[in-house]
Amino acid sequence: MNVRLEELIATLGNMTRLSRTLMFLISLSNASLAVVHDVSIFDFGFSPPALTIQQGDTVKWTNTGAFAHSSTSDLGLWDSGLLGAGGTFSRSFTSPGCFPYHCTPHPFMKGTITVPGPNQAPILAPIGSQTVSEGEVLQFRVSASDPDGTTPTLSVVNNPSNSSFI
Image 1 (cartoon, helix red, strand yellow):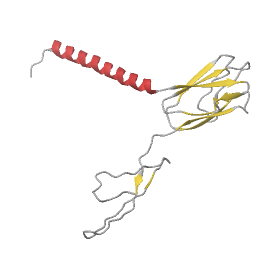
Image 2: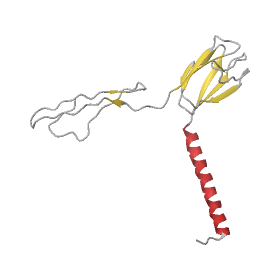
Image 3: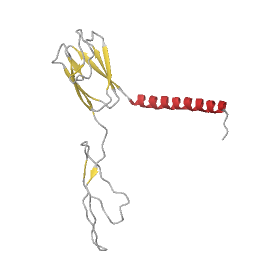
Image 4: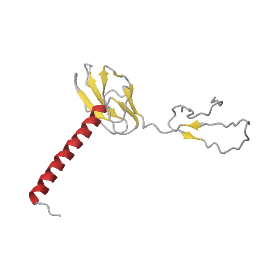
């Protein structure tokens, strides 16, 4: 295969531009899914004190009080430092977990950020096999459990005529 060097360079240049464009579009689409959640720091508390967000979301703390406050992780993951009146601090949460925090100069001020993990598929219990003669009733029980605590919904597709699903 004979390819001129100029054609190869031009092709690679176009592919590089295309891959950069695709990477930008992918990054842009993922960034657009993230949400910024506001937490007000007032004299002397956080509002809301408990917040549940999604992975990739950002929390922005704003000191609306007259005194200096902080948002400081109980786990040592972040520390805003002292925020004067009107001061802000933001942090993105990229992993699931429960993240308690407090105000350093006022440790009685407490809050929690909860980031749930991804939904996990339910686990179906095996139903085994059964043999019945024509005209006999075939019965079996289907049950499921869900590792993340959500309630599974069971349904039937292609249900034979004269049969029921209870």
